[in-house]
Image (cartoon, rainbow, N blue to C red; front, side, top):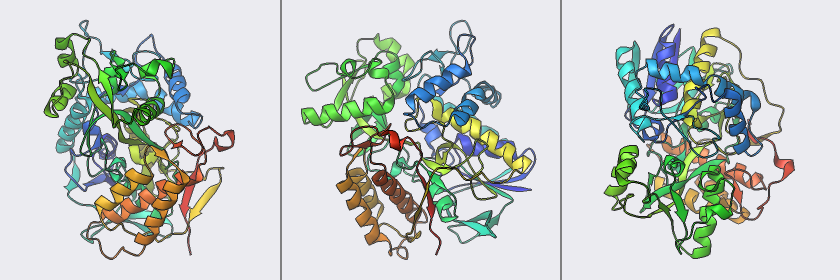
Length: 498
C-alpha cells in the first residue's frame, strides 16, 4: 500500500509516521519541512489531562466559543482523544514544560474555564513539536520530498489515486492525505508563513470534494504589525494578565465581555477593531509590564525576543498590537475520521473542516486537532472505509473556471486585505468577486503552481462570506451586524460540473 501525505506540519508528519507502520509513504512539502504554522505556534496545545479537568468540560468550552456551529460529534472526538494525543507527543520526544513538582505545567487561555494548555520552551511550543517530529521523520522509512508543490490531484473513476506535481510528475497512491495547513498568507497582514496559501482546499475542490465554512477566517487579536508583516503576540500573555488599552490608555475589554481579555478570539478581535475605528488609530496597546520583568522574560522568551527585534520591550511598557489573519476554521469537509467526500482522499489539520471549531476556534485547540484527526485519518486509511457521507445541509455549487489565477501575489493579498478582511460588507465582497472574475482567464500566465490554487481558495472565501448575511463568530458583516438564527448552519460548496 502507498500513502501520499501532502504537508509537513504536525498533521502531516504525524500522519506520515503512523502510516509508515503499515504502508510505503511519500511526504511532499512545497517549502522546507519547518516552514509551517505548527512551527510558529506559541501558546501551546490544549487537552484535559488532570483529575480536575475532563474532556466533557473541554468540549463545553469549545462549543461555547464556537458560536453555534460546532459539530458535537467532532468536538467530542477532539477532546476525548486529547490525553492520548499528548501521550503520543511525549513519546515522540516533545519536552513540554514542567511545574516545580515535576507535573506537566498547564496555562489558561481565552475561553478555557480551567488551566489545560501545555506549553514547551515557555512560548515556543510549536518549535519544540516541529523539531521532535522532524527528528523522528528522519529516522522513519518515509520518502520525504521538499520543494515540490502539488498542482492537481489525480482522479480516476471518481477516486483520488495520487497527485500531479509542479514538475509534471504523477505520484500514484492508494490514499492521499491532505495536510497542507492554513490560508493566512492569502492576506497581506498575517501571522502565517508565506506558504500558508490554502492549497489543499483548492486541490480538493477541483477534485469534486465538498468544502465547508470557508468564510470563517480567524484574525488573531494581538499581532505586532510592521509594514504588513505580523509577529504573533501569544494569547498566553493575556492568560497571564496582560491587558488591552485604547488610545487614551484605558482598559476597554472589561466593558465588552465578562471574561475581558480572555473572551473568545472573535470577540476580542472585533472589540479591538471597533476601538481602533473609534479612535482613528491603527493599533491598540497590550500591557504586561506590571508583571515582574524576569518572570516575563522567562515565561515568554520567544515573544520577548521577537518584540525586541521590532523595537519593543514588553517588560518596559505597552506595545502596539492589531488583529492579523491567523487561522482558517473552514476547509475541506471531512467526517471525524478524516474522510472527505472523494474516495481515497483524506484531510487533517487546518486544511480540513471537521466542525470541531465551529465559527470561532478556541485558543490552543488547533495543535490538538492536528494531532487527533491526523491519527484518526490514518486509522481510516488502514481500515479502508468509504468516503464521508454527504451532509444534509444545502450545498451550493460554484460555476467558475477552477484554474483562474490572480495577476500577482501582491494583488491577491491586497484584495483579500481590502475587501475580505476582518470586517466585510456586501459592497466590498462584490468588488473582490469582480476582481476574481477579471482574473478568471489568466491561468496560462503563472509559473507558480500555488498561485492558481490560492486564487481559487480566496474566491471561495469571498463567495461564502457574501452569502452569509449575518455576523457570527469570526465572520463580521458590518451591514448585517446581528447573528441570524436562520444562519445557524454550515455553508457547503462544491464545484459545478459542466
